Length: 75
Image 1 (tube, helix red, strand yellow):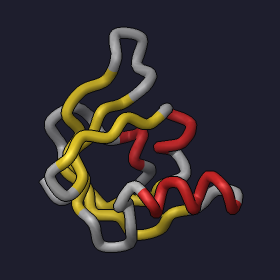
Image 2 (image 1 turned 90 degrees about the vertical axis):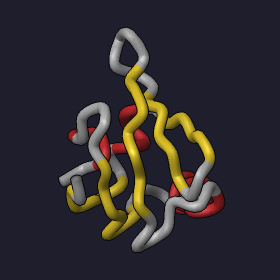
Image 3 (image 1 turned 60 degrees about the vertical axis):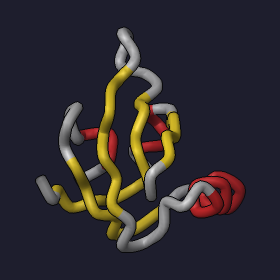
């Protein structure tokens, strides 16, 4: 499933980070790497962007960026 499909309060484990090279590199530099757990904290009122917690810090991603990340739901 894609990260953008997770709902608030759910946790996912990163399986793959896709996207073009610059976007992919930016996502990896934020600590969103294979095996990392992501907690969906909340969506903005219009469902874009999404705020998540990765390795103890908060990150906001556009929904189209989150759709490039393949995860498996943990909780």
